[in-house]
Length: 365
Image (cartoon, rainbow, N blue to C red; front, top):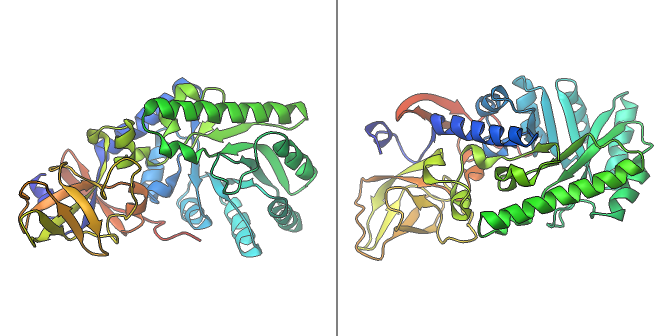
C-alpha cells in the first residue's frame, strides 16, 4: 500500500483506473472477436463516469436494472439503454416513456399482464417501445420457460401495437454456483443453445429476432462459447471481486476496486477489529470461500464476521496487524460496495487522480 492510500480517512473505496481500462478493453475485445456486442450492466458501478468510459471503448449501450439508474444515465447523455426488468404499474410506465424521449430504450416483457399494461400505456400516449421476451435461466424469477411456452407467449402478444418484439433475453443466474472456468463454459453453452433454439422457433413463426441478449459477468468471459447470440451484458468485470477470483476468472491484479480500512482494536492476540462493516463492505458471501473479502496484504487472515461498523479479522497464528495499521480488502461482491458510498477515489499508477461520483447510488426504484 502506497503512502497516498495510507493517508486516506477510512473506510474508503478506491479504484485503480488503469486496471479498469484494461478490464474494459479485455472484455470488449473478447466480445468483438466472436461477433458479440457488449452492453454492460451498470449496476456494478452506478456511475456515469464509468458508463461513459465503457461507451467510449466501443460498447453498444448499457443495461440497467431499475428506472432510477436509467434516468441518471439518460440525463448524462447515454443514448442506448436496456432496462432489464419488468415495468409494472402506471408510475413506472410514465417514467419509462419519459426516458424513451431522451434515449433509445428497450425493456423486457415476461407476463401477459405486464405486456398488456405496457402496450396500453404506449398506445394511449402514441408511443411504441421495443421489447425482449425474457426466458427463464433457471432461477425461476420471472422469465418464460424455454420451448413451446415462449412461442405461445409471443403469439399471445404479437398483435399489440404499442410494443415491438425484437428478440430474447436470457439470464443464467445458476452460473454463479460454478466451481471453475470449465463449469462456466458449460453454462455459457447452455445460454447460447437456449437462445438460438428459441429464436429459430420464433423466426419460423414470423417473428423478428434481431437481439439475442445473454452473457453474465461469468459467461461473458468465455465469449467463444456464446458465438451466435448478438450481445453480452457482463457487469462486474469492470472491477472484479472475490467471486471472480474463486472461479479463476480474474487475478488479484485485475481487481480494480478495494476497500481501505484501519485496525482500531485488538481484543486478543488472534483477533483485530477494523473500521469497516456491512455498511461499507458487504455482507454477501461467496460460494467457495469463508469470510467477507480478501485482505490483499494478508490473504491468510480471515474476515470472519461483520457488524454494521466493525469487521472481525482472525489469524490462526498471532495476528501481525496492530492498531493503526491500514489494509486493502477485495470485496466478495463489488456491485454492493459502490452503492454504499457517494464517491470513490480514482487512482492511476498509485497516484490519486480524482473523486468519482456514484451518481445513481440508491436509485433502486
